[in-house]
Length: 86
Image (cartoon, rainbow, N blue to C red):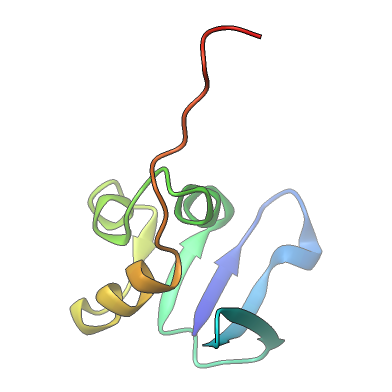
């Protein structure tokens, strides 16, 4: 249950329900917006750059303690990296 805000792209704003089953995610419009985050926070979460707890500490996520472990599991990933040669 996410409430996303994006000051640049209006269509990114809104409340969304993300359901995950069998390794697949479905996103539907409309939810209670239990977790509130900006598009920057969502990007950090999606890429594995930041955990829900990190995002909350820096003010990019609002939500109850009970929701954070599930959010972390849904977006579990290793930290992004870039090799230094091409």
